[in-house]
Amino acid sequence: MAYRIDKSSCIVCGACEPVCPVDCISVEDDGKRLIDEDACIDCGACAEVCPVQCISEV
View: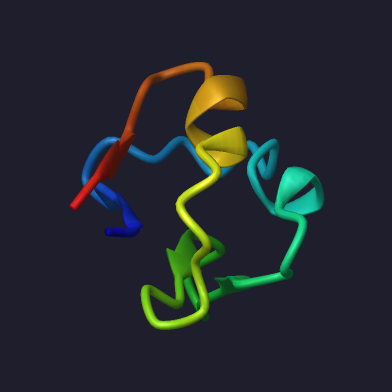
């Protein structure tokens, strides 16, 4: 399993990126984050800090 960011709900706060222990969250051109699902270790740290709950398990 992995996590995914719902881009339509993302508020571009950046809270998820620094808590990822494997650095699998990148910034796209529009500032929104993208999770590399192949690199994600399913720890859920990003989902825990998201203030709008736009990160969920795939």
